[in-house]
Image (tube, rainbow, N blue to C red; front, side, top):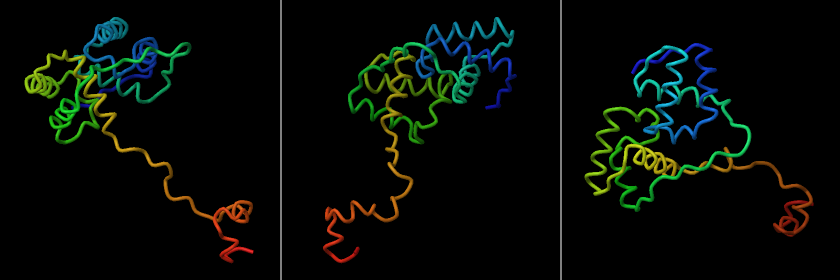
Length: 174
């Protein structure tokens, strides 16, 4: 997959287009995605396939600076899947789904989508399957640690003398 080059003007255009659309994860396989792509083409005359355009907006969105002012966007919900169905998604991605942003509009995604529907008996659209993959990926992340490392140092004198930890009674502090 080649790296797409983008000018500062194109980047600014994409940020403006993305500011008024649904959250990035909710875009693949929607009319909003098609409209964004069409607006981008009409402005730049740069024709990209769906996969290239998705990678482009993903990269620009990850840079930040797209926050929308005003009311929050409505939350996009994925279809409700049973635990076995969620596990099937994980099983279909043996190398993990952490790098899922590369998947939309690829043959790999289409193949996995078909296999999932066949194995589960569901008839999810590509959009619903994408939302499900995204949701399962977010749920399967390991939790972030509260601290980079265990806190070090001495207890504040007031706590140490309070007897709460028994340090004064043990003769560890005076």
